[in-house]
Length: 447
Ligand SMILES: Cc1cc2nc3c(=O)[nH]c(=O)nc-3n(C[C@H](O)[C@H](O)[C@H](O)COP(=O)(O)OP(=O)(O)OC[C@H]3O[C@@H](n4cnc5c(N)ncnc54)[C@H](O)[C@@H]3O)c2cc1C
Image: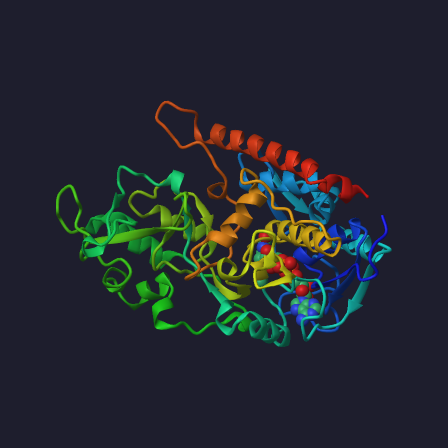
């Protein structure tokens, strides 16, 4: 194949997303300029000059067929993704999770890219968006100057600098015998309401006040807007503060008894299909183990599964539903692809997967081929569809979870949750592998 002389793509950031993007582009025979500022300029969380540095845990999540991350891992292995195949090669025993030796993992990713003849590494901070086809993958800690440039390009209001998120619950794990649908004061019944008696509220309040919060680094410290105060901070202000605030029962009388509960926790739909529900006003910085305990102390959520934990920390990300299309390009700037946390994904694995897709489509763009989008049944397909179709107001980054792909609904006689998820895994992986072959992606990846 003769390539046009301008067949180059710039990738900004050699983290989880940028590393996968760079290799995907190079495997298409397209030259890559890979820009990484470390070690010339460090972020507050990275410590080395290795590509794809794991800033915290060394785990990519469980790999079972009942685990949503397991499906995304299998898809990325099928696609030949750099991060996932390097994780596989440097795996350490960790029960059912894919955990890695972080030094060997980082060395392998770095070596693979540095030794690739089509990849040119530039160790420098990028202070403006280059011309041509670009993959922006500078992550949650994008340097300030570049963040300002991105902001200027996409619109000031579309780049968030922090994440104040409430936990999101798997709809399958909510007890629908307890929850009732109702909007406050008879407005549209878009919410699920979980009613508290005084005893239930006492139990919840005790769990909430005993739970431990994540201690932020200095650079993470946030000043809260009054409408965005974490639920644990409201509880610190007094016993009644949460129930006079986000847990206010007024206008939410129970439809069966017409009685007003002592307090109410409301759930708002996060996705079109109603598979994910977020707890309204429950933004929280509680440690994840303690957070699960607090959530499960709410009536109707005793068996809750959290698909995305609440967090309060600095995070740079775009409002994907307003800006992005499912190929990972910006709708108004088709030469500009975005991946990783900046594109609204959360997690090492998710960032690398969107990096692979952005890189693949960036390469296809310079080669004059149409972009590709993974099928709906696959976890990557579900994730990118969520990014472009989520409610833009209050949008927060999302990780792999079963709410993103079609899973058979639960029924009293039907198969259990594990089996339904395993079937979704098989369906998703089959669809993804078939799509790779159809799109010619495997052939090119091996080139
Ligand atoms: C403190 C912290 C802890 C986290 N812990 C976990 C965890 O345990 N597990 C998990 O799954 N996820 C975790 N995450 C979330 C997320 O999955 C990771 O941050 C992940 O690394 C994001 O991938 P990314 O490619 O978007 O960004 P990154 O992996 O951060 O990569 C971005 C790269 O861009 C570089 N860069 C930034 N600005 C510029 C510039 N102007 N010029 C050149 N280079 C630049 C950075 O140096 C970095 O190497 C954590 C996030 C944070 C902030």
